[in-house]
Image 1 (cartoon, rainbow, N blue to C red):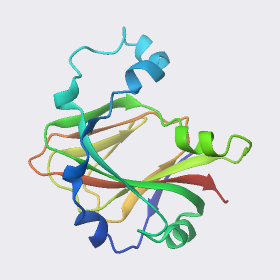
Image 2 (image 1 turned 135 degrees about the vertical axis):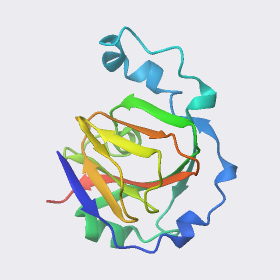
Image 3 (image 1 turned 180 degrees about the vertical axis):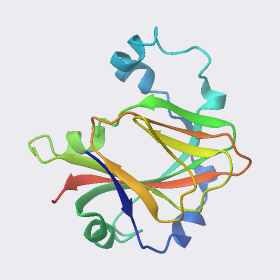
Length: 174
């Protein structure tokens, strides 16, 4: 399942947050957990390193942002929400989402787990996300895509300004 979405929401609180409080590499677990993807390419490339895979990720609670409003618009039961600031020159290599936190918290639930990836600002030159064989550019704030664990995707910021996205994950209601 891969579908375009639109979220009408005030992103100002998310965009004005202090992203300097967290810095990490998006590959810290990909390199070990997604070897089935990497094997077909001869293994995980050694050229991916901390410096070119940095993200600044913040986790939000129901008290911080309105999970009910997000879920209502997206057609999902929201379990987690995070935002990512991807600096210029950084990328997230090819991967699929495993919904680790949701599976750990709700191992008995069999509903389809999904993630909505929403762009928080209008597109800037050099920013893109690829979902399977489709490349997403020229978006507007609020645009995005929803997918399940079967879709490979990657992200790159080859531009000159930070790229901000919101990741809303949970169970599909449709």
